[in-house]
Every structure is written in C-alpha cells, then in structure tokens.
Length: 360
Image (cartoon, rainbow, N blue to C red; front, top):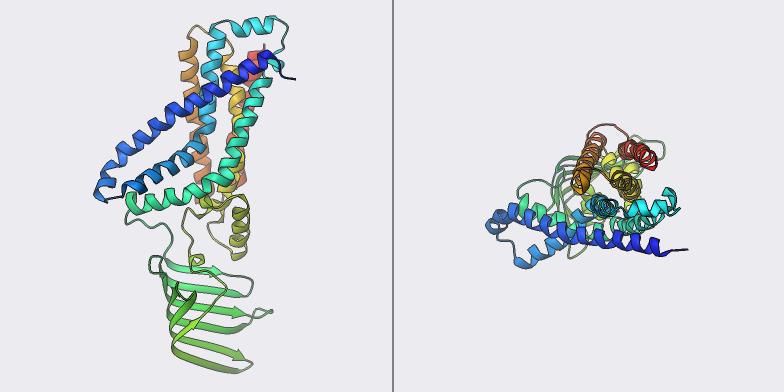
C-alpha cells in the first residue's frame, strides 16, 4: 500500500529525473551540434536529415545515459531532503531505513522498464538512421564494414569468399562458392570474377561464371560469360556493417547472434556484448539508485555540492569501467558476459557497503 510519504518521494523522484533529462539532453544536442556544424555545412547535409539525426541522437545517447541521469537526479533531490532535515524527521517517526527506500525502488523499477523497452525495441530502429548519418556526413571516407578478403560460412556445408566488396554498388570481386557433402568432401565449386546484386530483379548476376562438379574421379566444368541466379544468402550477409547489432531489436539480435555463431564469425564477441549491455542497463538503474540514496541521505557539511561532486565522480568511474571491459571483450578473447558483469558486480558491492554505512 502506497502512503503519502511514498507518493511524495516518488513524485520528487520522477519530477527531478524528468527535469534532469530536459536539462541535459538539449545541452548534449547543442554540444554535439557545435562540434559537428562544420562537417554538416561542408558536406551540405539537408536540414531535414539533420533534424531526424538529432532526434535519433536523443534516443541513442539518452538511453545510454538514463542510469546516470537517474543517479544524479536522486542525489540532487535526496540531498535537498537531507539538508531540510526531512529524512531525519521521517526516520524519527518510526519509519525504518528499508521502508524509506521503497519508493526509490518503485521509481527505479519504472525507469528500468523504460530503459529496457527503449534499449530492446525503440533505440535499435533509431540507431539505423543515427549511424547511417554518422558515416555519410561525419565519417565520410571511413569504412563501416570489412570490405576485403571476406570469408563466410553460410551453414555446415556451404562457404563463400570474395576478395573485395563494394557495399554501395552491391558487388563483390573474385567470388567463390563451395558446397561440401555430408562427409566433408567437396561436391561442387562455383567461381566468378564478380557477383552483383540486381535489386530490380532480386537476383545475383555472375560474370565469367564457372562451376566445377565432382562425381567420383570425374570432374565436370560448366562456364558462362554471364549467369543470373539466386542464392540463399543476402548480399549484405557478405559483410554486415560494424554497427549491425545495435540496429536489431531483442528477437532479431538473438537470431542474428545464433546465425553468426553458426557461421563462425570472428567478431561474435562484439555482437554478444551489445546484447548483454542491453540487459545490464536496467540493472544498473537499481545499483546506482542505492548508491545515490546512500550517499545523499546523510546531511553533510559540504551539502548538495559535495554530494553531486561525488556522484559525478562515481558516474565517470562507472563509465570508465564499462568502456575498459567492453573494449577487452571486443578486441580480445575476454568473455562479453564478464565484461558486463564485473563493473556491475563491483558497483553492486560498493552499493551494499554504502547502504550499510548510511543505515548506521
């Protein structure tokens, strides 16, 4: 049952959190615009695309920073409660510290649900436009995917290779397709000087086509100057963009990871890391809520300023740990699960310690 006290704290919780979003998101947009305005003008980016980009920017960056905004907003309004001796009055009236925390956990649950829904279903769609604009205007000339010496395993029996791939023209060079039978023996091999996806006809066009079929000791060779055909793979499957995992929702990402794992993709850790981070962000909301309450519920000589300074420091350390372990998972064989669990575990233990200290 919700009491007047619960509603009072939860109302302050949510209003301060919303105020923090309305304050810092526009500042983030203006800071990014100030940094990128030169490239926007030089590359003549249309105004409509710029507006859409910053809408996507708000969703993508905002979702990543929601736990931090939550953390700072709790420190802000709880410090005000402490400075006005409201917390002392609440606890002196017989309310236990654990009971005092209940509206905070209710608020954290609401924010965690928001983070989950955004991260799993809303932000992936926004990430498509966000990254496409980035590479089109801000990272012009930089590759958004591997384009040379591409080897891909389609399934247990089929393998493809291209020496280079042009994603804009949808064409791959020195194409090879090998099919093996159930005992691992080469059944046939298709090669072509290039393979091109013809969008209008939804077919692949092979130039200088050659197919070698093996039947026992006999080899049959078929050649064509040009052949239009179909394959079970999509042209973009040759080499997905580096940010492909960020553009897929919960169900699409699970299917994509299973597919890439079956194909033996070398950068599978990067995709798995994206998946685990999405699950970790809602959990971080609870951990940071506990730390924020523990830090700011005690009245200090430095007041709100000292608490906010401490909170900003903790936020930077949290982001630092997240980036370090994330890079380890992407660039080495470090487990993506551990890369996500370790920072939250460290701060979880710290949260429990700070809570026990504040309770005393």
